[in-house]
Amino acid sequence: MSFQDELAGIKRMSVEKRGAEVIAAYEKGIDELRADGIAGRALAVGDSMPGFALPNADGATVRSADLLGRGPLVVTFYRGGWCPYCNLELRAYQAQAARLAAAGATVVAISPEVPDETAKTVASNALAFDVLSDAGNAVARSFGLVFRLSDELVEIYRRNGNDLERRNGDGSWELPVPGTFVVDADGRVALADVDPDYTRRLDPEQVIAAVERLAR
Image 1: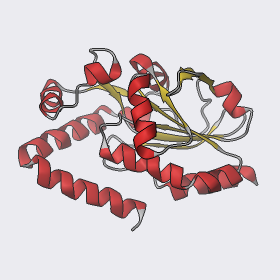
Image 2: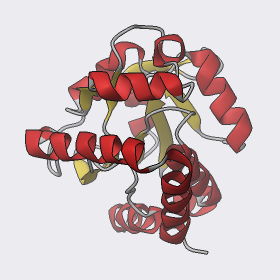
Image 3: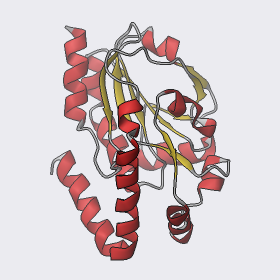
């Protein structure tokens, strides 16, 4: 089964599980983000990536300057370990770790969750790459990805047991729009994918192709 087929399968199960009213609220949130134009304001191809220094799941500080010193960098922002689409995406990058490494690339994933939560995500998905905690969405904000959930969605998340106040360590109820960036060793963005629809994700094959182009 392809990555895109797996995404579609999760979406079908979500529709069956959540019901029409909840799904309509999710779709309304997506439409509002599209109308707001958040994707058009995000970091784009040719831009310089903002530097960052964030803790990984073990509490060690990971610096973008050090990562870029190794070669191309793949940065993927995910909503949290509670999101099945995000977990599928993270596992897909882990499955392609050998191919990405062969092209000289390093992968990091970033979410607003506190290190204790990212450690659970690393363990449950058997991830070997760094998963970083972005307190207050500071780095995601510098990439132009941050939005606040509507009051309607906050209540739905609470009913579903997704306590973002605890998971993220603040009461903002802000999240990053899922985004994936391939960055050349000089810090320039070579590929950018930002989609307000959290059910859609860039296929890792496209990331691999971009990294391999940089390696040539």
